[in-house]
Length: 508
Image (cartoon, rainbow, N blue to C red):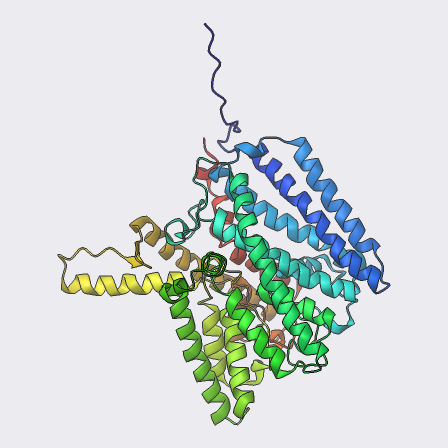
């Protein structure tokens, strides 16, 4: 009797199912095309040209559908192909997201600038090469904000469903996401996780929008109309930092700034924790979560340091000093990148505090960037354990986070990731500094390091001409491309991209 052979996963001679990975990339990319309908509707409402967004949407859908049709096997994609899928989709989304800028926005006619602006949005960085933000059309300004919002959704799925399965940076042991195990297709896991969190993400956006709009309608903040409330809500929840104003959120009333502070804190919280605490009505989890408690403590301490510096240096006083200190501290630690004042003009001490926070980041599983607070927490516990075992070498002490034991492989992965992160940050700053020196662009070593750390961490503003009220426009194309690469690497947490350059990944 003939017994049919069990179906096997098709793979290339290299050992990776490239066709299946490309099939999934094409399938995911085509879902970006409907996103262009939102700015199209804004353009129609304000009597602006529709064609840049319609052409971009058709091009995106056509490329994605064509790639999907030319390949097959997305249901067979597993963790090994996941590195290629994650790296390609994030790059292609930024490329196609740049099309409206190239087609219509004169300030972004340079392809390097258009890609920078698009990558900044989708990576939720919020850095910009624009020199006249308020000169953008309403539809183009909303597209900038919407790219950040879309990127935020993708980041939540990436952090809570994909990266733990790819064992990136120790995530598989640290973050309990109830994601499917390795035996299920990667695409299925993405779909399941997206359904779980997209509603929460959208609800938080709608809540902030409603509050900001009410402040405008009641004349508490006359400048906060519905358009601005929408744009800033989209980028706050995404920790994206794009503003419709040249001077970020500085022109808005104090009430609006405080509302944004609250939602930046929410956006910097692990969405798995938010889901469990809010949707499943288990608020005590917030008090029990070590990362959440540590984050609030660090924000309180850093805010106090900045406020004291503002008061003692007579930069601001009273409620204004407290508001600016808290706002900019929360913005930098959550990697949102909004600014309520030009902290570029503050003291060296405040610059050190604010940019020190960019190397910490907020919670893992949030839309924020950087190293993430939980990794710092784990490393601190490792140091404490090493000290204890130096004194008492016979003691065996498993390392725990929120009561769960973190295995030694995850600990090694965390250490490797942090070393890689710091190395990439330094390398990026050297490239930028050398390029600026060769081209006669005035940039100090600290400003170069700040720009590199800010863009790798998805923060946005740097120092000097790239400060919170400035622009990255003075950088040359070489530096602009280097900064774009930093945003790309930082958003994907470096390792998924670097894996593709190793021969062991491709061997059967």
